[in-house]
Each structure stands twice: as C-alpha cells, then as structure tokens.
Image (tube, rainbow, N blue to C red; front, side, top):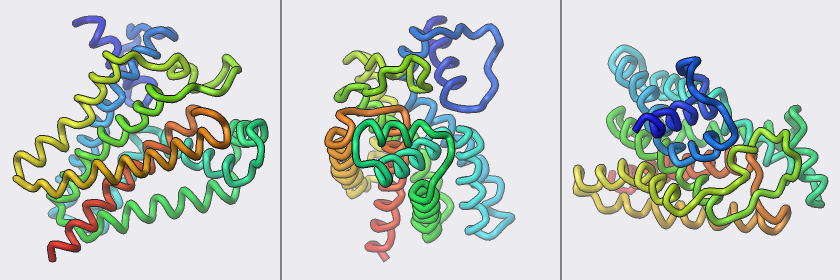
Length: 258
C-alpha cells in the first residue's frame, strides 16, 4: 500500500503543479509505473474545478464560474496537456516529414498553428459548458477529467513511443504500460461515467464512449501515419481532444433534451 501511495504522489508530482512531500521517491521506474494513476490525477483536477464551481456558482454569473473552473484546471496541471496539444498542432501543421514534425514539436516556442488550435480548443470547451447548469457542468467535469486521461493512457498501451533521445520530457511514458496497469487506469477512468449513468438512470451518456472511440481512432491514425507512434506532446493532445469531445457530448445531449 505504501508503494502505491508513493506512485500516486509521483503521478501528482509529474502531471500537476501540486506540492507533494519532499521525501517522495523520484526515479524513471516509478514515473513509468505511476502512469496507472493518471486518470486518478484527473479526479483531483476535477475536484479543484468542482470546488471553484461550488464557490462561485451562487455568487457570480454562470459564465464567470465556468471560465474560472477552466482556469483552475490549467493552473492545477500547469497547462501540461494544453502545451502538448499546441505543440502537436504546430508539428503536424507545419511539418511534412517525421523528422521535421518531431523537430517542430520539440521547439518550446509556439507557432501560428499551435496558437490558433489552442485558442479554438479552449473556446470550444467554454462554449460547450456554458449552456449547462452548474450541477451538469460539475458532472461533465468529473467525468471528462479522468476519462480523457484514460484515453491518453490507451495510446501508451497500444502504440509505440517514437522519440529516441533520452532527455525527452515524456521519458516516463516511453516504456509503455502493462495490461494490469492499463486495466487499473481504465477502472479509474470509467468509474465516474458509470456511476453517473446509474445515479441519473440516463443511459444516453453511454453515447460518450463511441464519440471518444472515433476521436481516439482519428488521433491515433494521424500519429501512426505521420510519425509512426506517439510522443509526450501527442498524449497531451489526445487528452485535450478527448476532454473537449466529452464536453461537446454533454452540450449536444442537453440541447437535444430541451
């Protein structure tokens, strides 16, 4: 149990900017194994977002509360996944060979493709959540944060890491993930959705799964075609796209029910 707790703290340390005890072990093996808890990190991020929605939901306009919750998610993660999405937009938008795409994604500077892609993605998140009631936004958040991270973990499980340099920031996930860890990540990722379906008796929420499957299929196909696998930036992009798809599903389902 102590080892699992240390792995969770390692995941929190790597995937968020939240403080952890200085005694938490830090090595490549533990970083790799901590990937199993990436969806659980989504629970933590979602909890912070829900806290903001709870505090500001009654004292500020809904548009302000929703925007502050999105800002909170960016703060908690240090824009870790958003940075990956922007880099992938730059790389796949400006590169025409595997080597050039990887070179562009490695560049810390953001380009036109990355800026526009990130701007449109964040705007779409906000617009999708805005028509929902505060309780529904909370539900969307607590489902999307873990489940979108599980979609990213599934890429680690089924595809290969393509960078060869050892100084990559994605080195912890370059070794892949075993089936047991993948199943554990799946449990953490899917439980909020399944509980929401049972609690609300709303089985239309299951439509989120085929929507995610299609989004994952497209992203995986894109990565496989152009670079032959994934990088850390690609995983961040997958998480961001999956999160946005879930919010879009909630928006569509709420609009169709009116």
